[in-house]
Length: 293
Image (cartoon, rainbow, N blue to C red):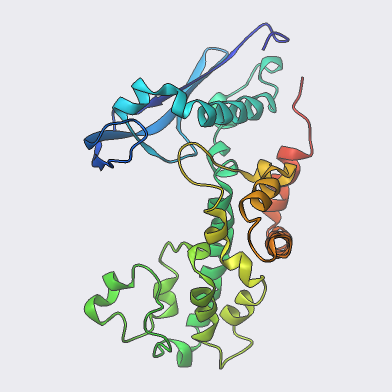
């Protein structure tokens, strides 16, 4: 950062203070090794104006220690991308021209605002789903229903019902306590969310489901084609700048209607933005105002 005469130091490392995750390295590993490997979470150490802080990488990945040290080029692209995001995020607060700059406070929301796009979308949809479930729980007649399709259920229900989880639909208030990967359902499973209460149109859960295109509820299955893995991840910034859409159309070029598919997801994202003022604020603060020079 020569214009300031000072620097922003960013270094990724494996946090070995955390207990190692031991798992088998698959035979098809790109590193040419197999067998048990010790993995640690990826962290970032940032230093600005003699202030230093450490944050967990937005990738939220456990990485094999040997491969991280011996094959740094495998992780170079994604580390550079996150480093650029951090540097831009810090510069937005104009740190070298204020006396009371706090690095820790500046980065307090970095991980949330720059998390992978699928996790950001899931966060807001899950928030809406939990509110709808709590509202539905107030209607006693809908508190417990038989499953229409026993094979469709919310992940985690085995822990509540044991071997009988497939016999009863969970109470809405119980579902509201779960962390559900909302956008990880296929169309049939997502549709079943409304089907549980399809005879009661006008309920909160029914209205929520029909507020978004069905493709948006299945966002994860489409996103998996272009995202995932340590070597690539896409953020809200990629969506707003059009990078994500380009990769999406490339990945789904063999789909019968790739443009219509993207249009449906784009519509879902617009609805999501309209329904969440804090998401609107996030977009405005981060991407409509230039980095201060």
